[in-house]
Amino acid sequence: MEKKKILIVDDEKDWTQMLVARLESEGYQTAVAFDSIQAMTQAVQSKPNLMLLDIKMPAGGGLETLKHLRGNTKTFSLPVIVITAKEDKETQEAAEKLGISGYFIKPVDMAQLLNRIKTVLK
Image (cartoon, rainbow, N blue to C red; front, side):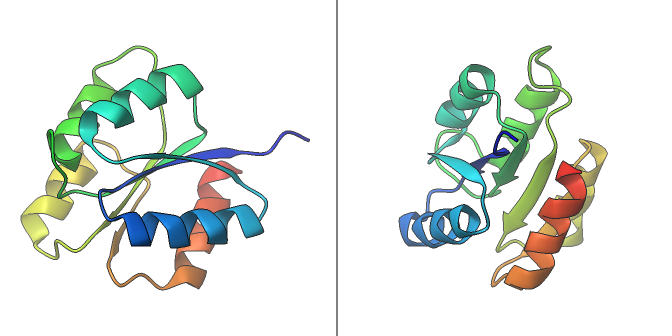
């Protein structure tokens, strides 16, 4: 069976390295993007099964990335789980309107995140 590919989009390098290590230990293939532009390029080219997306990033934030994903025929159905430090309701509601598959606030409960990823990728 082919490994599911998860694209991690976050500008915090320590966090992405930890997440890559954890997801790969769980049997997933990973790719990393550090801003919105890289995220869109990789989403189109590498065709991940899931994107883990931060909201606060350079070169267009996570909400802009989500809007671009949903507006592109190649990526409009890509499942996205948001992982962010932004706790405000407005951000969460805006993301939910763009069709996300989960919203986690940092620091993340890794067991809950892994359960959500498994559910989304079934």
